[in-house]
Length: 331
Image (cartoon, rainbow, N blue to C red; front, side):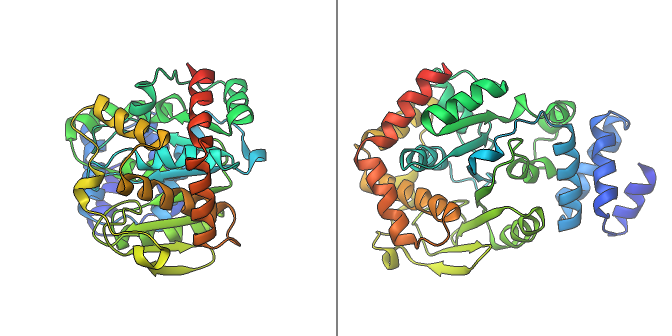
């Protein structure tokens, strides 16, 4: 580790293989806590490069508990988190709208990092029990179009560094890795990032991973399409900036996306969206993110067409029925 730290202190960049082996050593507790803390601090103070991120990802994937859902051509919708906006569970709502529209979703998630309610939080509020058993996950995606993979059940390597991460209390490389380590072999991913620098990092990384992807950022700093400002979309196929008005949607106020002060309040907002009794702003934001997910699966469909598919899923009650079936199967 001393040689690695000396190299990093001199602003050198690790190769993919060096980063891979380094994180395996961390997972295997080959370094003491001070050395690991120094490593995490380095990447807090300087940018991570694509080859390093890929190498760290390789290590987590190698040590993960794998569930093969690749035959479903499933989508994951996830944000990097850390935008500090405390929005309601937009991505998780969008997952059920996409599944209600007839597509397959394999959502990888966890408890909230910078918000009151992460994906795992809101699902637990409904009595969902998490599992890493492949037959149960396949039954869920077969029966209602969506399976949920609670990250701690699939990544034992993360448990090694969890106490240190809590003690440090700042974002580390593991926050960057979360969106890249879905253990189910998803074919495509909608990823929200908080700034354009992260957009470049993840776009270049996902190109090398080789899945279908869409990376989105709202230009005022949201790691999803928030409709509070113009937003940028980069995919395997194109790069565009849209305003809400271009897509027949309204610009919304940031306060209208607030996720509440408690998990119970976040749950009520989530339920209202799927039941069709949320505010117009809350509904529109879920629709555009679901539409971006559908567009990721079917890049030949333009966004207005995908918005209408998402709207039909939500307004017909199919998204709600999908969620109710999911809760029944996973409780």
